[in-house]
Image (cartoon, rainbow, N blue to C red; front, side, top):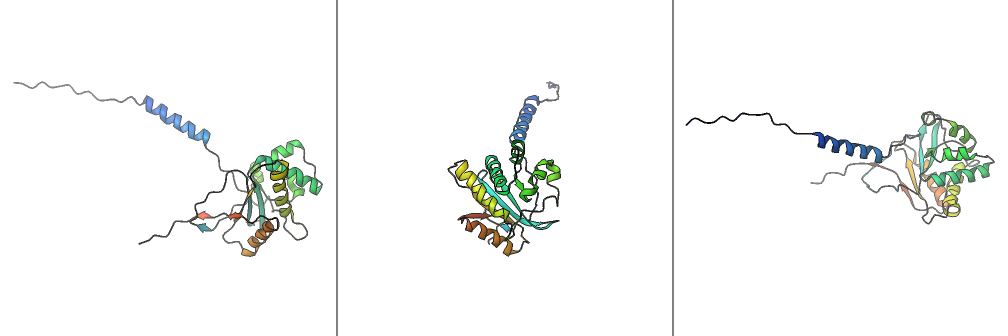
Length: 212
């Protein structure tokens, strides 16, 4: 008996639904992702196996490194309202009047490294110009002009007294791996003078050693 030959047809799969799901997921991740802000003072942090993450809010970061201006210190505050209030207090301290527009613009700057006298010029710059190497010389920490100490005092006051936040600020020191220890020690002493004895040291992730 002769076998009946079945005609073969090319199988096709409708990919429309899968493409829709893929584009929806892609759109979701793009809209919810947080863009990494450019660092005005890039540093190579020392390696560590510690996996503790720094908080996303209520954090103050003091960065110590070197740029075209030499050894520099930069100051960063995560919370916009703390940045704005701290700027007002620093303006009163140093006799610099900032307009509401300047305060609003400063609240968008996460990290900076200029004296108070140069803040107006920094605020007026565009973001790409502001973060170019050598534009920001660093915050003064001399014995005769220690503006970093005042930033620590006034951002703490802005958080605890003016804004009346229940949680105290967390402080972290981010130093270059090649940075000399005395400079880091100076920052630590400055924090401890303000009764800030708990602070983090920012490190890069290093793989754990293999065990047999």
